[in-house]
Length: 374
Image (cartoon, rainbow, N blue to C red; front, side):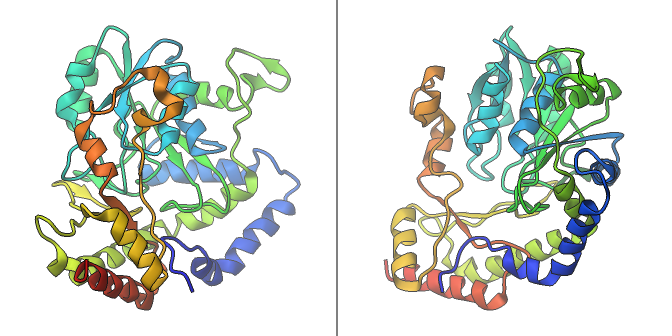
């Protein structure tokens, strides 16, 4: 049987009755769109983060897009972010009509190099969009300082960082708005697509609710454009309500898996060997993915598949600025050297809370076999 980086079936087997009960509850409620389950999840997700407002939307990409639009960011405005991210981050910026401007990341933790941000600010810059990648937070303190100094909005991309903390603060509680994805693989994952935006601002909350519902406040009357059909599904919301009560347990499970990897792979690390995830000081990592590095990455992945039937993933093999779909931005290859070097070396090991120890041991033993025979 092939070993993959993610598998929801063990979790589903353990939680099946609760998931099916959630479906039954919604189907029996008499309200299938924007009903009690969406309202309940919004209130509970906001409360988990200690914020006043949460707006459920249809996916994480639109969570970023609507967050930007709710803050008045649109055509021609520049948004500073990173190229070492999932493409949807940048698709959302582009979808809002704004222009993504990239800074490089740090080699040690793969997160936005905040020392490069101020040099990238121009008169057209309207927002900073840090990506809390792989399960830990960007250094928000310098970004807050720059935002105040230059009058910029801050939108946090928290798609990979549910429950992560920096200096005690949860991801998503520092910026003007924070976008979350509940894609099934996420730390808090639905059984389909889903997303949300957190904010402390009542005005931003009101704008988000209009934006996700065609620009309407009352049925059939559009108050403003743009408007979208971007509502969180009622069934997914009810499943997420129940899973939210287990979020801390999911995180504990991920950290347990990460500790076993660190212990099992420590002797394979070195200057020319394997590099394991580094946790930045002040961060509490939730290990959405367990990303390692090796200069012979492609060969390792190939041999693991051929010799051990282990199929691994790369997050992400192509920096966004090198993709044909973003050639119009005119960002030349070579301009983000750390991002581009990482893209040739990183790969992800299996990571999910219900990962059996036997499978994790299989991966560790297989890596040991491959790395000692390359």
